[in-house]
Length: 249
Ligand code: MN3
Image 1 (cartoon, protein in one colour):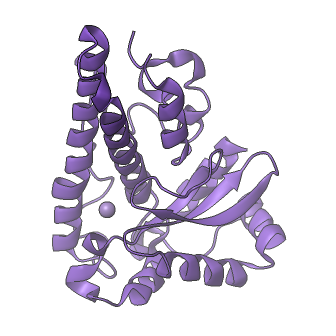
Image 2: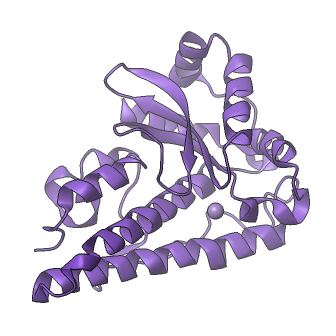
């Protein structure tokens, strides 16, 4: 009986991250979401019906040429963990409201919390797995279909890189830069996201995201966001991004 209330709203909010609320409990339409992420990726604990924080796919100091170990630890153990906590809390509150039909005025509040924290959880999960140290094969250029479609939709890999960096660097306040796949027009697009969920258009399937909240880079780069984004381009796990692209289209 979960997620009866405001299901449509949840879909809209989560669609910001290319995910529908169906991901949470409804196996029937979890298919679209599962194109890029699995329940395991998101640390879904079936027995206890809650999300857990998945470990990083590499050591905390693995990306240190671009992102220092302390930033990685705080970002993962504190910030990402906080989104997972907030997500479980919002789901519990909404479930409680539906069961006893009290506090109905708070539905909107908890729905917003759900949208924000679910976005945070999904975004960070995609972010960690979307990076790989230069020494392990990160950086460089994508291959095969993804490279061909980047060339088709942006003109060249260099032009794509330039647009992506610009969009990410120019996010107002806290947010993300994304490369997304738009299924209706069958093309790649670059998009900005504010906070963890705002502005990214419905239907966009996220492929590559760079976190430009200050917590992602401030210790090492302070206000030099452009330098951080420049460094990020050297540690993209293009194999993983290609996998998402093939799954999405
Ligand atoms: Mn973050």
